[in-house]
Length: 288
Image (cartoon, rainbow, N blue to C red; front, side, top):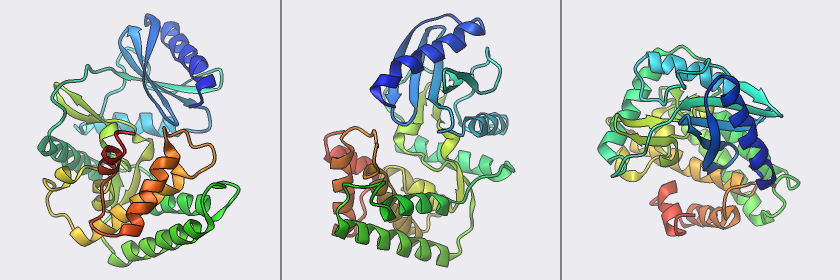
């Protein structure tokens, strides 16, 4: 979210909390990307704020309720608020339970078990969702349009476009079983709590093979996930690298040091296997 919008977004979130009787005198920014994540105090509420029209917050709220009822390890909605999307000053605000972070961070074994439990619950929830290939299409559209990715070199535009198309075909040709997925279960979307790891940001849910989700997690995590198709996982890891590369070159991308990360993603795709995980690339760039 643009810096100029952050103050307004915080005001919108605190206004929503106060309007339903939750004391909110201050807010701590926990994360700022396409959405703003806040800790509202002293009521201790986890608020997520996005521009209206740039989110699928109602879908996320409804899905979170159903997954929590199914016993899935997801962050629950704030019980003192109605389970809905609140709108203020052009922002969509959702309210969630705040958990104090615990240390040490979630172990790879616990992470894998939680993701396996989430997937099991998602197989039981009859919820609509886009197919993972829709995400590939979005990336292809960014790459294909120089007006949307003006700083991407032409030679890299051709390379990235071809890689996205070939990986889509390769994954589809495998005919793997598909189900509802988190979509982006990377460490940034996992809360370490005293009750174990909990997943957040369900806006990214889509349907596809579980290996697509596993392509977003650290290597040590999928080592503990059962029955992984290694060939399919390699293809999914490549397509995730290619999609994220496309988004880092998108005009208006707000990811910190996004162009530098975009260069590193392209370099990883050119270099070939073994395919690095996203967290490995972040560490390579000093945690950017």
